Amino acid sequence: MTPAVEAHGLTKRYGPLAAVDDATFTIAENTITGLLGRNGAGKTTLMRLITGQEFATRGSVRLFGAPPVENAAVLQHTCFISESQRYPDEFRIKHVLEGAPHFFANWNTEFANELVEEFRLTRKQRIKKLSRGQRSAIGVIVGLASRAPLTIFDEPYLGLDAVARQAFYDRLLADYSEHPRTVILSTHLIDEVSQLLEHALVIDAGRIVIDAPVEELRSSAATVSGTAEAVERFIAGREVAHREKLGGLISATVAAMSEADRADARTAGLEVGPVSLQQLIVRRTGGFSTTSTTTLEEATA
Amino acid sequence: MTTLTADTVPATARPLGRRISTIMLLQLTNPMTLVGWPLMILGFIYVLNLAIYGLISTATDGASAIGVNGGVGFIWVYTLVMAVQSINQTFPLALGFGATRRDYLLGTGVLFTLLSVGYAALIATLAVAERAVDYWGVGLRFFDTSPDFTWFELFLGTLLVLLLFASIGAATASVYVRWKATGMYVFWAGLVVVLVGVGFVLTWTDSWGAVGEFFATAGVLGTLGWSLVISALGAIAAYLILRRATPTNT
Image: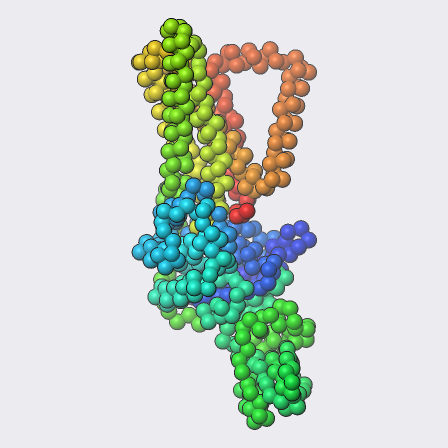
């Protein structure tokens, strides 16, 4: 099957700044991919390159097998919900819901109306008068109801309360399993969405630093905790991403844990627990030294 | 990883007409913006003028005001405003919804041409109607800017004016959408320099007379016909500028 997105050496420079730097990756069709990274890491630029909104300085990107720039044949299958999408001044919610369906072949009006209710909006509300979170909700509604073969949510939850965010995740997952499509979700609320994600693409300073299935990432590292002595003995010579000391106890995040390693740890009387995706990525994009970077990359490659 | 069968994504684009109408419909979704408000404001200005002319007529014992009122010029300027706002506000949205820049521009071009045709027909018709009621007997020549023009000449003249304003608006909006405030500074500064330059050259070469003569010979419709050159340049500029623009939501 043709991947939904395929990038080779994709680079976008703004003057001396490389917003996206030599990115090579593929996004399989009908997956939910998390595009994760810090502020200014290049998430938005990358998504804009994918949808032909931005022009690449170097390298190439293919969307459903074709270059996306000005290509109606593939762009018609995309819906890009921007983090702070602006709407025409005189638009009410109903205008968005009436204007959008013409763009999307799979648009579902009933679904859109359900979502409007779920997010406690009414069609008559003027968009200018809405709160930040409510405006985000409109983007979420359009993105979900569009059922576009490639739907991109760029930080879709800004200002959304916890209940609304959960509603978004639940709806996305439910609708996705009924109507499979490719979803790219950029976010820094990593743990919140980690249950949704099948694949993680982590970008830092413009470079793709992790490109791996979430399952694999999770199993690539583990926390090992127990008495300081036992932990120290176990982690000696291993790649330790992070450690926390509490009294006589140590909890260490160890990269590259095989099944045998886990068994060893348990035999040594240590507790082996999962590492949150967020922890892993925080370490990777802020904390890891260069050597451990390589180790984790090898572990997740 | 992919276990569910994807509906195969169609590899051909929808027909161009469909894509263009999609863009037009987006901008017309709220019909108040491009049709409702301008007509209501125009109607309001008209009624206001009618009241004032009525007062003058009463106060002066029926000696009616003479000459063109000019109030219809509102719709000319407002066409520019509409082009600027519509492009600035719907371009990023349409691209987010998967439209290409080209389709967006074609759709917007067709939309504003049709709007101009509609407004021109309306104004020409109202102008003829004004004649029929003898300007309400108070001399209010609001729509009828050229009493010796036929309906068709009025229509054509208005259409050319509206196209001119729409294309200037489109070009201005494109500069803003692509280069934001910096673009505006350079654009307006550049425009002033060009205009002053032209004035300087005309004065230097002592050609103002020739310019006047040109307009006199061309006549109103002839001059407006020449405006098509500027309209075309504006539209082409808008097209070329927006083709390389990246939508932003700021």
